[in-house]
Structures are given as structure tokens and as C-alpha cells.
Image (tube, rainbow, N blue to C red; front, side):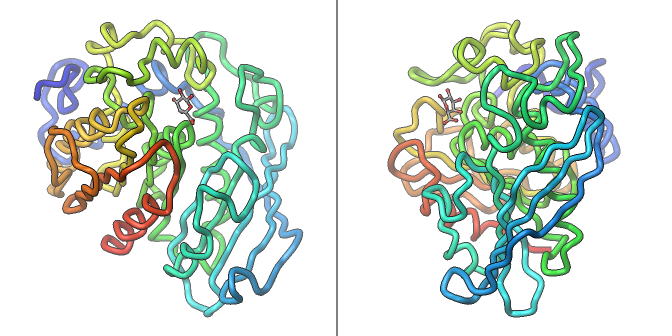
Length: 353
Ligand code: GTR
């Protein structure tokens, strides 16, 4: 498949053919994605944390739950984001999954909390609206604590949500209960886009669990199928998720500049797991699979297996996990299901460092 623009080619047209080339290409791509899609995030600020409540026995008694208040000390003020942090109480360190979710409930319909803990993970949750609202208001919450560039490259909301996940990690990685080598971020839909963009930028993250992320996530724009969301649609209703520069792109004009395989590829040589539901045509599971194929050369130039699949349409029950990018397709609709979490946890367990 000939995806334009080429992933393995620098902007000046020269080839990306060594691991050292890829390191430089990744920097170039991250800069392109900041400038033309998600917007540049604010400068890193200090984050402090306070544990305000501890439930020493939760989820059947084998884990504890801490309520943590994360305070971002930003140039225009402080903003505090609550976080739930579950940790098994067996005295061992455990891999972490950090979920950015739609609701603040620790036992939410988008996460089988007890099952995640039983699988030996620490589990942290942020609610995206506690960071900043899901609308075009750039003055509330953490958004109001920074000046936002007005030259078209200023952070969209996805970028700011991802920024807050990174701030949460600053704290989480200080916790002795957490295995720092095995950190995953997860999200669904708009928050799947967010988890992907977070992992693309942050090399502390070993696993990105990217669920139903679709347009602006892991669905390749140039291959969009009938009934799929396109850039035109997303800009009309959710333009504030992206930087203003992105609004000029359509499915037709994007091809010479960027596409979503570039964002996914920035996770190389780490691990990404892409999951979708068969009836979620809006997110376009097929274009997500093509995107995995298109991103794979980034792993291959680093000597790793990229994607153990091709660009044909998947059957229900597909779980391709022989490479660093895993892909699964389950039956059903747009949702972050237990049937998504199971392959994600398996992918992590198979690839622990
Ligand atoms: C839809 C949007 C998608 C997806 C979804 C969600 O309305 O068009 O891009 O992000 O919302 O977040 O549930």
C-alpha cells in the first residue's frame, strides 16, 4: 500500500533507513503533529500530590484505593485534579495502567476495575473533565492556567488532557508500588486519541491501549470507509480537540502532509494495542487496521516486529499480537468493554520488561 506522505522519509525527501535516522524522524514527526494536528502542549510544570483518603481494603480486599489530589503549579495559577489509585496489597511492585476516563467513578462501566487488579496491575484513573471541560472554552480548569498560543499551533483539548496524564505519571512514577518499566496508558474514543497522543510523546510509557479511537486517533484518514467520521466532521463538531492549523485539512488535502499512522509510529519501539468493535463504523475499524500496517515500518527499522497483520478487513474475534502493535476486533458497538480489556492485559503481560 502506498501511503502518502511516506513515513520512512524525512521532510526533505531523504530516506529513513537506520535506527539513528528514526530517532530524528520521530522528532520531526512529533513537531509536525504538534504544529499541524494536536497543538503544542504547554511547558512542563511542577506537579505535587496529596493523598486525601485511603481505603485499605477494596475490590474484594486484595487491593487498596487511594484518593490522590494532583496539583499542577502552572504559570497563571494552580489547578488540582483528583485521581483514584488502586494498588494490590501483596507488597510487590506491579505494572501500572493509567486510564483517562469520561466519569470520575472508580468502578466505571468502561473499566472492570476488580479484574484489572486481579490481573496484577496497579490502576490509576483520571476524569478528563476534571482537567478541563470538553468544549471550546480554553479558560477553565488547567486550560485557564496557561497562555495558549494564538498562531494556530496552540494546544487543543486532546493535547491538554494528554499533558495532564503526563503530569499524573510524574507522581505515579515516584510510587514504590509501581513497576516503572511497565507503564501503560489507556483511553476510549476521544480519550483513545488522547492516550495515543500521550504515549506518542512520552517514552516513559511502554504500552498504549488505544480503544475505539477512530478519527484523529488510529483510523487512517486517507482510507476512510463509508459511514466513518472524517476530519471535516470532527472539525465541525469537535474542532477544539485539535489545534487551529488542523482545521484546514480534509481527507483529500491531508495526504500530502500527515496522517494518523505518523502518530501511532511515534510509539515505536514501544508497544501499542489498538482495539475496535465491528459495528463501530464511525470509528472505522478497517482504517485502524490499515493504520497499524502503515505504522509498522517504524518498528522494523529498529529491528523489531511491527504488526503481525495486513490491510485486509478483520473478522470478529481477530487478535493480532505477534508484533509490537496489537490489533483486535470484537463484536458489538462503540464501548470500552471487558472484551477489550482482556486482550489489552494479555498484550501487556506478553511483553513485560
Ligand atoms: C464522537 C466523535 C468521535 C469519538 C466519540 C467519543 O461523537 O465524533 O470522534 O471521539 O465521540 O469520544 O465517544
